[in-house]
Image (tube, rainbow over all chains, first blue to last red; front, top):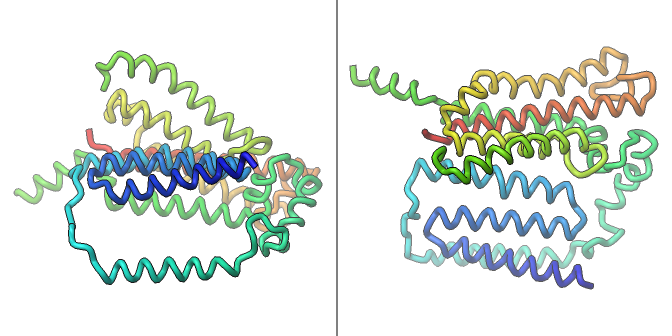
Length: 186
Length: 136
């Protein structure tokens, strides 16, 4: 029961943070609020017993992403360009999508129900087989690294590709900039 | 921010601890929460902290960008070569069972190495992103 209360409190805080992010026009404050949002999600994941996900969310969402945002902020202005007019069409689309999503929610199985498709398909196979076949206690690692090794290879390749992409766009060192500028001047 | 005495001293104490924790998360991922992704990010965080406190130029001297670029590629290579070694041993791609006599030992070896590859790529990617965004 106490976990339910904690969940409700954290979810309320998440909504409040989201509204605060939306209302804020100082980008620095927005960035910090995004970090708080990540930290709150991480606590929510801990309550849901997804420690590995919580760990990742805390390290990536509240840690590195925040620093990269701050780095990007140092390149631009701190104030959001004010766009005061409210778009009626946008509002309509958001309301429509939201109500569609809530309508769609009625069909999905109850939270944590054993009849969830995700529980009935391969989960038992992994839970029963992991100890015998892989022999490591952390089920998440055995699924991630062994049963789903291909997927993880894909993820690493995605990270590597993203890294190459960012470096191609932004990766010039200061010296290169000077080189370009002096070449353009001459 | 080098002239801030408190930051300077705290960073000096924290950076080795963060690195140690990253290594723990990396190699203890089989037994507790964690693994290559998280460990890589935490390891990169220690370098980024160093860069923020002592300046990006000094960080560039500690880990040269070209070195860290090759490390990012090497991580993916380590991962793929584990898969290729399992093919050479007569199994399918990424079938760790054949990396050792005992299938479970093979699984252990395979998982340790691919997590190492993941950690290397993630850590160096994060440091490179920091280099790309941070201006001295």
